[in-house]
Amino acid sequence: MNAIKPLPDLLISQIAAGEVVERPAAALKEMLENSVDAGSTEVTVQLFQGGIKLIRVADNGTGISKDDLQLALARHATSKIDSLEDLQKVASLGFRGEALASIAAVSRLALASRRAEEKHAWRIETEGGRLSTPEPAALSRGTTVEMHDLYFNTPARRKFLKTEVTELSHCEEVFKRIALSRADIAFSLQHNGVVRNHLRAADARLRIEAILGNEFSETSVVIEEQAADLRLWGLAASPAYSRSSRDAQYFFVNGRFVRDKLIAHALREAYRDILHLDRHPAFVLFLEMNAEGVDVNVHPTKIEVRFRDPRALHQFVFHAIDKALASPQPLSAASFPAGGRRQESSDHSETGAGAPTAAFSAYSRQNTIPLAPPLGIAQSQAFYPALFGADSRNPESAETPTALPGTGKCDVPPLGFALGQLLGIYILSQNERGLLIVDMHAAHERILYEKLKSALDNHTLSMQPLLIPAIFHSDSLDVAAAEENSATLRELGFEISALSPTMLVVRSVPATLKDADVVKLARDLLTEIREFGASRVLTSKRNEILSTMACHGAVRANRVLTVTEMNALLREMEATERAGQCNHGRPTWFEISLADLDKMFMRGR
Image 1 (tube, helix red, strand yellow):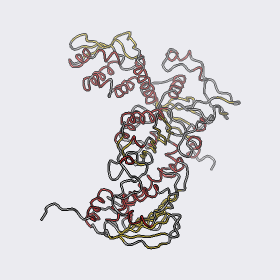
Image 2: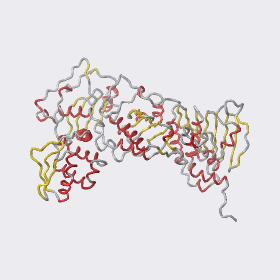
Image 3: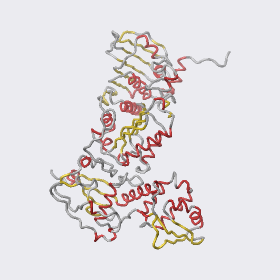
C-alpha cells in the first residue's frame, strides 16, 4: 500500500479554507469583493449571530449564467484571469478562484444569480462538498450568496470562533473597508434583523465622513499628490485626532485594502515629528499605480502586497504626507470632490500654522475680516520685531501697541494678537473666533527645531562665538568624544575643545541657541555622540539630536515676555511648519471659541 496518496477534494478545500476563511469576517470580505468586481451599484449585507449563523450578500451586479453556477463553486475556477500575464497586472479584487469553494467546504452555501438577458434567476446549493443541480429562482438581477452555519462540519475550527459581539465587530470592520474603497456603491448592513449601517452612493469625502465621523473629517488635511504613474489622495488626520490604537488607519492600493510594512514605515516617519510616541495617526489614503508595479498574489487573503520599486514608493508616500502635514489646509466640500481629486480654489488662503483643528476655516475663506468690536491691544504686524532680536532686549524701544480700528477691515493673523501671559507659562491670545492658549515653550521649541533642520539641510547653520567661553569639568570619555568628533560638532554648530584631560571649553554654539544653557547642551550632545556614534548622529538620529538642542534653546517657563515678544512668537508660529505640535507630538495651542465661552458662562439663557 502506498504511503503517499492524493487528498480528497473536500479535504483540500477545507485545508484551503483554513487560510482563506479564518472567521465570518473573512468570508464576508470575499463575498463583498465578488460583488464589487461584478460592477454592482447596490450591495446589501445581512448577518445573524455575528455572521456565524448566516451571512447573506445580495448585489445588483452582472450576475452569473446558469452554465457557470457550478464552476463558480469549483476550486481554481475564475473569470478574472486567463494567463500569467493577467496575474502580473491584476485589476480585480478577486482572482485566485478559491474563495467561494473554500467557504462552501466549511458551511452550507446557496448561490442564486441572474444575468440581465436571462428570463429568471438560477439557484444552486452545496453542503459538505455536494453540489445540487441548478434550479429556477426568483431574483430581479445580480447575485445573492448565503452562507449558513460556518464550520458546521469542522467543529474543531468552530470552537476557535469568538463571541457574537466580537465576530460582529470584525464583520463591521470588513464592511467599512469595502465601503470606503468604493464610495460610488451603496451599501447597507443588517444584524439580527436590525439595520446597523446604510450608506448611499456619494463622493469620497462624504463616504469617509459617514464612516469615520465629522471630527475626523474636520481635523484632517487633504492629500493629493502625483508623480509619474503614482497618485496618492485621501485624508490624513492632524495629530489632534491621534488614536491610542491603529483602528482608524485605512490604506488602499488600486482599491484594495492592504497592510504593508513599507507603507506603514513611510507614514510613521511622516508623523514622527508631530505625534506623541504612544499615539497613532489616523488616515484614509488611496494609492493609484500601474497594476504591474504591485504584486497582489502574495497571500491567499490578498491583504499583503509586494511592490516592484519599494524605495521610490516609500519616498513618494513619505514626502506627500510630510508636505501636507507641514502646511495643512482646512477641509471643505470644494477641496475634496467626488473621485478624490483636489480642486484649487481662489477663495481661501493658507493658515501656515499647522493648526490641529479647523479653527481658522473662516479666516482661510477671506483675507480680511470686519472687526466688531475691535480687538483690545492688537498691533500692526509690521511693528513686530523678530523674537528675542535687538528690540526685544530693549522692549521700551518697540512701538507701543495700538488698538485696531473699530470700523473698516483688517487682516487678522490666524493666531491672533497677544493679550498677556498666564503664570509665566501660557500666552493668551485673541483672534476673531475667540481665545487661544499657547504653550510658549512648546511653540518656541518647534520653531527652533524647524530652523535647525532647515539650516542643517541647506548647510547654512551659523555659529555664534561666545563672548565668554563656557568652561566645565568633564570625564575623560567626553573629552575624548569632543576631540575625536570635532568635525561632527562643527557641522552641528558647536566648537568644543579640551583644555585638559578633565576640562572642556565651548567657544561657539548655533546662533539660534545662543541663549541656551550651553554647558548642559554640550554635555547632552556629547552623550549622544558617545552612545550612537558620529555617523548616526548626522543620519538616523539627526532629528532627535536637533530636537534635544531645540528643547534646550526654547524659552523657559516663568520667563516674562513683553507683548511685542509674545506677538512675535505667534507670528513665527504661523510661518513655521508643523507649529501645531511640539517636537514630542504634544499640542502647542488650543482655541476656545466665543460660543464655547458663552456656554460656560450660560450667556443667552
